[in-house]
Length: 196
Image (cartoon, helix red, strand yellow):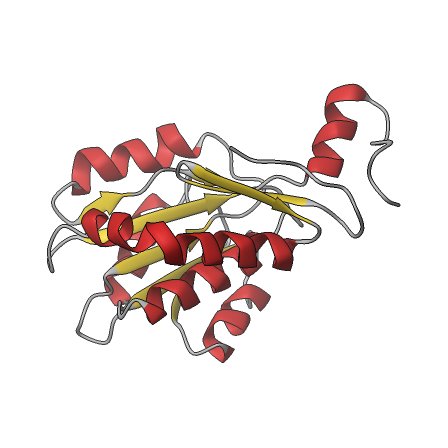
């Protein structure tokens, strides 16, 4: 249901469950998504949150520079406006994560998994989820895997569903994509419709 437009700026494709939008830049795209969600997504989101014991777990992937951090910040703001408690887990191959500081400076309860991806540090991902909430678990957990993390469905999502189905409601896996880079990777040539 996405329409791609290349008027100006760097385009980003944002997909969230069955809703997708493309904007002139990542902020426009994310604002479009959040605005659209305010109209018809709130009921769907509340339905995903089955009870106080279950935490809705969103895993938002994509390569470096795709807009994962910006997307998670916007999603967290959206859920906060819905009256929900939000926790965020950042991930990278090294320590002292910039993303963690961005999330914390925005006022969100944030944990991190460092020195490896969620795939290799699954137990630490679960431990990080347990540390969030200051005694009151979040309703929604947003997790940003390192951009190089591959096969998240087999190594993270399926184990979460199998081992922790009573604790987490797993939202559809979301991948952010930079259409300019994708076009170039798939065709071997720069996007002619994209402004440069």
